[in-house]
Length: 574
Image 1: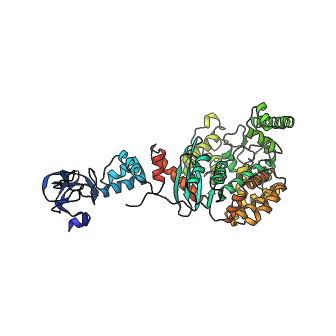
Image 2: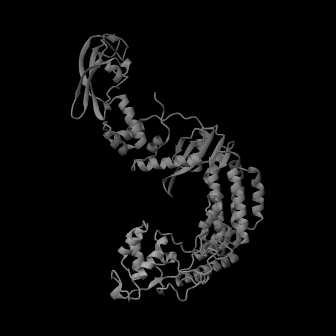
Image 3: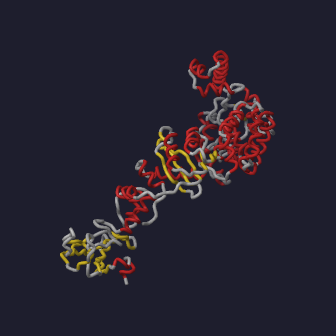
């Protein structure tokens, strides 16, 4: 029967009529029972006092809203000791008292609210034929009861930003079930310690190497094994590599220039990279470039503004060391020279004044076609659109604007009367201008990635560059060797090799690695456990990423209590 398909059997409802309107399908229902049960005393009564109608919404049918027209009877209660003189029959399996929607419709809308939030959920519900306001969906989330979650055996802990750089909270994740178990409104030590005291039984804690969580875990769960997150260990290693390579500017210059290039030629790449340069040199139709500088000379002769900045930086470097020699205090140097303590420490850790190379030129789609472009220009075609069409016929996929930028630079060196002709005369001398540029040294951050990347992930040119970096400086070679040993320890989880590695680094004389090793030594238990256990904070970071997505999805409706409801797992059905 239709009633058995649409409603639970125990509800004992009967369908009296079905009508289809413009806005919704209306299903008239009533109880199939002859008697009602008094909710006050539990006695049955068959004497009807009156009846009325309730018109709640139900789940949609084929995308069209469904509205129930329920006939509700009111009975007399003949029990003298009962406080109810009359009572209305109930349909608890389908509809709660005073509700304007069925329980199954409410459950469906609440599920959408948890998945999408208020306004996005409202839009989806409206399209599915169960219209509801965004505020009602938000209230449905807040009304959900939080589940009772057991204390995890293996816990991951990390912070998340409520306002980046200003206010942070804490998320705690069960790494075995891969579910968040709690959220805290703060990341201060006292809040985290209080949580551990209220949830005894945690055996393993995976965390980053922030000072707050190190202290909180040691105080709140001293019996638990701390694990330093392996990703952060590798990140700290890369930072140490950067600090070492920043003191080796000559090595960074060496790897910037391919070994086969002894002089700088007017390559097509230089044309693109130098279109904003100040000085240019004319090139004849034969392609000869007069007075062309070598790469070494170009590197040794930076622009005047860079030379002045380097001189000021060198003077400040010497001044920092001089004041520190007299005072012996980083704080005093920072106060006298009006610098940050971090900048003072960076100068003091350096053997020579740090260099800050200019950013490198990026590869362009036009690069493979520049020779063809130059041939067309020298043949007399100075129209950018025609040049672009010719390149397109040969497979060029870039825009016309890219060709137009190149042509605009070349057109500046034509006589004014000839600059905007589509085609130059055969007798006209069309020149091609190129600019020689110095090879830009690699940055220390860029070079550090060659060391920390897996060897199998390195391209052939990257392997060659890394080899030249090792050959450029003995201390760099030693640094790379230490870094490779540590990477192998972390990736293969070899805790027995940690202490010998730390001892070798401390006597190496490499300041950046020694600082890194001292940091590991201060957190040696957690670092050793990171190499022993398979657990890490990757799942916790993933939950933080999910939290950020939910927070942005809520269009500003992400107050802590509401966000907490969406992040934590929902309770199962009653």
